[in-house]
Amino acid sequence: MKQNYFIATQGAVLRKKDNQILILKEGNKLGEIPINLIDNLFIFGNIHLSMNVINLLLKHDVDIFISTLGGSLRGIITRFYLKSNYKVRLKQYSASNNTHKKSKITKFIVSAKISQIEKYSGLDLTFLKEKLLYVSTYNEILGIEGKASALFFEFFRKKLNNKYGFKERKYYPSPDPVNSILSLIYTLYHNVLYSIVVSKGFDPYIGFLHRKRGIHSAFVSDIIEFSRPALSMYVLDLFNGGYFKWEDFKKGKAYSLKENKAKHFFSKVNKEVLRNPRFLQDSNLFLTQLEGLF
Image (cartoon, rainbow, N blue to C red; front, side, top):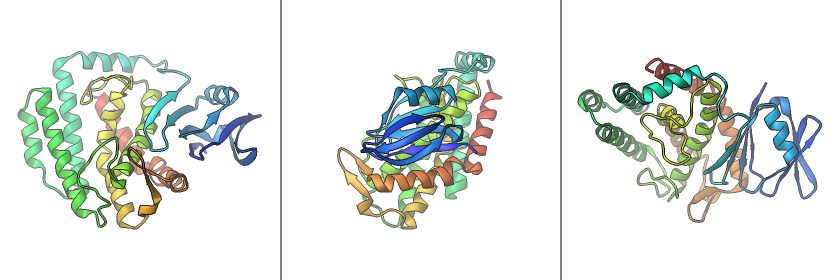
């Protein structure tokens, strides 16, 4: 059965041997992965891939996600930028250029996220969902989404037993261990969703709530909004359950996991989140619902 593989051993070298990927460090073999078992390959930090490895992965339609050790995505190597099923993209482009549809879809994304916040936090945000019905501008919709997120992370902070310096949700650079893990798990899930979005024929860069900026895959970010509350609560449970300790982190420009803990964490997340039907089925259902609005 195919699965996601994570390589975070700094200084590791990946080489091809027949239809297997060998993982080496300083001439010593650390492991091997049969190509037919790889769904996506995630590379973190200083890892070297030979061209033979890259060609083998692309031949078998395996996407390669390249990130810093802290989880910041640097780039993606993929066989096809977009899959051949263009009909769904035409509907997506048409909806993106239709002011009424674009607003309706943007509101739907925010409303769905608010419902998920209510589900996982127990907060009553009816007033925000009602307000959402009557706003008309993009900035007003963003304001409601921002308020919902702020209320959720206020709840999150109160539930966090050991704060680890966490005061509020902040993105890169992560000012504390909790924010670093939130950013990391969002990035991991975002990368898996990227492959799903492209495989279903969507354009990952044409978003609705998230508007295009630079190389940002805006539509993938739209999809992950639905799952952020569940992912965040998973992180909350890890910290409250004592899975992380201060010594698991290192401080540079931002907090990040030390190498040994990162490898264990990637394996844990792959099993409990990235291959968990509960998360993926919810995301696929949300994606289908969005397509129905195009």
